[in-house]
Image 1: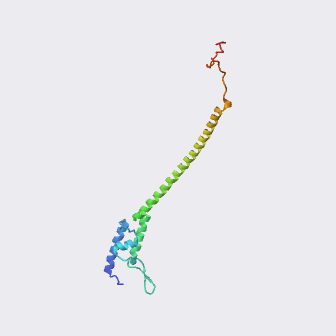
Image 2: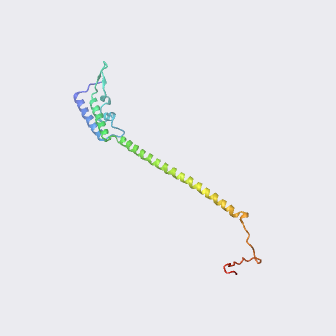
Image 3: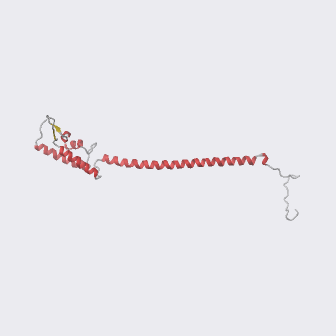
Length: 170
């Protein structure tokens, strides 16, 4: 792999810084998110440049853009801690989480109301059943044969004449 010249490295670093600023402002490409992969793609540099390399003897050396990757992650973390979310998907996730919490509260309230209404319905039905049983008992009692008394009849079938006993006669 060819070594980077100082001019090419400077141009790439400038492109990385410009892409970093765009991403941290929230100007993300479709399907992109604020991470090193998107940063590398936006800047037109290989993503591996943001990570440490191993020499042939096994020792590590920093990648050509590793310091920029660390700066990007540090700035991103600072923005996130300040409450400025630069990833629209993360904002959507947060909004949906809040919506789920609200919907769970609404479902709980509705479940409680439904339980109260079910209890009321059960009580009302049992009272109606008791009233119906009482009414049926009263109807049977009213229509029982031993409950009917015969009134003294008249000879011609007319109703008996009421007498006024306070005056002593008719």
